[in-house]
Length: 107
Image 1 (cartoon, helix red, strand yellow):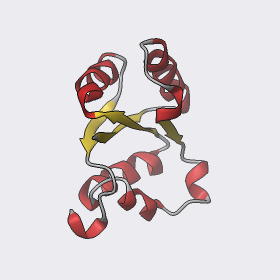
Image 2: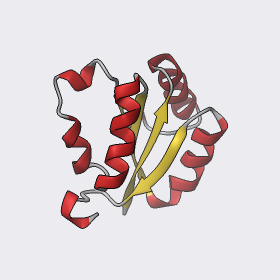
Image 3: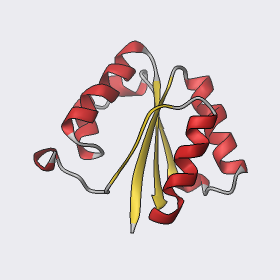
Image 4: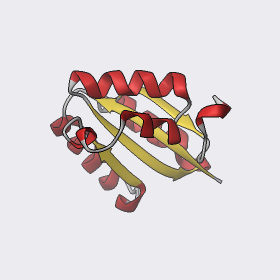
């Protein structure tokens, strides 16, 4: 089973560096998505509710509104702790893991 791991970063540049580090550490580039504030103008902030529970979606939405970027990863459950540790080591913020497919009404 896989998990969704989300981390906020205080800039797109920091998020890109963190992604590069994760990929260099052996994670598959196809496992990651980067959400930046500029992109969220086209995508509703409410779409975060499809990724994370509603309380956490508000937290991540606040990060985007402040200009932070988000990294979203789908990784096997046995890799979650390693990815979280990597994010913590390289400056990720509010890092959490969630079961995939979580809906708003399940929060």
